[in-house]
Image (tube, helix red, strand yellow):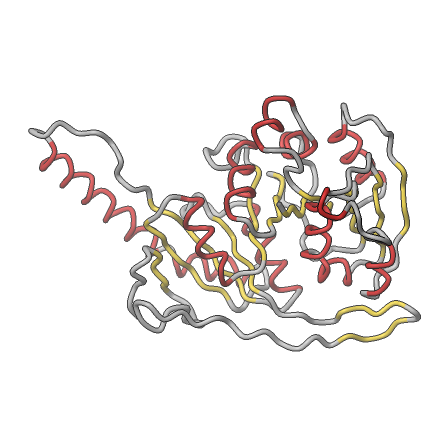
Length: 321
């Protein structure tokens, strides 16, 4: 199988992504097979593609175990992706040939080591129930590589690991914002992906919140209990003149999801603490929320729910910008 001209190298996969340098084969989606239980329709099986970012290929992170179990529970495909750094240092013209040659050789060795990790990745994925797994290595900047791979995946799983360069709250936020795809951010401890009995929704009526709920609908249909955490309402300007306004409870009911509501304090000063406390009180296995309702700069300078949740993460969070 030939590598892509875009810098992503598919390897050790039963489901080819590239059939040539420029041709991209998109995965097929299975039909939905709903069943009825009382008045609520539950989605038994829906196939989608899970992408897991692996910052390390010698020690698999807890987030990869979560992604593998998630893929197994939905009978979905799993792709693990590792990115190799691109040489970008300024070199003296006199030293450039020698140092560039050394850098290129070091990068080649690193890339080969990453490619050789494919059997280990597949074994790890299968041990966690994911039988359809593929491993890819990208020569690209991290956010750009994940953005590109996200074109044929439905959800990206990230690890919130404080002591790794791409696991900090700020770096995870950059990925969530830069990839423009649904992301599940997993805390450093090994969360149980097979349990989606209770899902909490952080709701403020914003465009980001609406998008997050819609992107998470397959998860919501699986939950036995959905709790809407009503915060300070901030309807998007684009929906201001709409009559009637977007009704989350009706939207969920139309999709076969029963829900209950919890009203949070109107104060926005500690929105992150309130959300996490309420989600844990509801015994939620997953929190669904929109990301960066304000500009990212204002969120990180003045604080905000997205920043606070990422910094104090203690349960998996489904985010959509």
